[in-house]
Length: 398
Image (cartoon, rainbow, N blue to C red; front, top):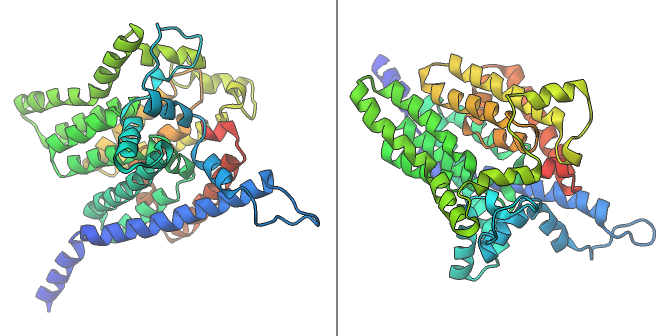
């Protein structure tokens, strides 16, 4: 009898198959994206649609235009310009907002897909975003399943699928691709597949500038796994792979602008300057306002997201050494994202952190009240963010 119980315990700890995880990921993806489309089109129709006599909304609404507005916003235009025409060839200056700040993997994937299967560039890019999200959910589920079992894995996947910042991951933007690649880095680190982690990290660094920060969890994971200094040094050199994107874009910028650091220097065109961490938060607290940067950011949202992320980092740190890579990645990202005079982009930087969803799932584990309240809060934020996105509010689209 005891032997049977022991066998049952061993079987309970066995990870789910990839097929089972993929089915869960696809189901969550379809359900969450259907909710996104329904809310987005509903808000769009009432905000921008045409009323028929009697106050009714006719069925001949411009649904394709409403849908396009949901997936092509703000930075989408810069990715599209790279996919269609490449990087702008002009001597470096900051008089205009050139596309040098955006990294090449996502726009060129959409361009190559267009050439291969004859889709429009935007359609190809949106397709990549959807496939990337399914990959992300599957890898996240596998990662959590290996640590804490299938129930918590499903919780983490659900929270990620219904992230309030879901519009970023649906749109013609690099966010979903970066999320999938960065999650792959954590998965490979968890399984001590160092070379694959470096390969995924190099691809992530070609997708978003913040990909270089994945070197932090890589080095922390190395420190957890190896004690001999010779081994640490030899494998630590591999962290240079996370700077691959900087090297490639630096070369591109040198060829097109004569300035290898154009992708960093062009930030001044957006009036972004480096400051000590949380300088913008302190300044905002002395001059409270709903929006900042001409309506392109919500300071309260950025500050709240940063506080939640820092609490998540502390929580993961206290869970044990196996969670230290994720905690370190959250911490360094939040600090550097806030080391600016601008709040722009901070919420999406945080939403692109895979360990955030792990921490949120762990936080509700074995807490019935939290398990009940967290989905309600996430659902409200999910709906509210999509509604603001559909209304074209720049502060949530940037």
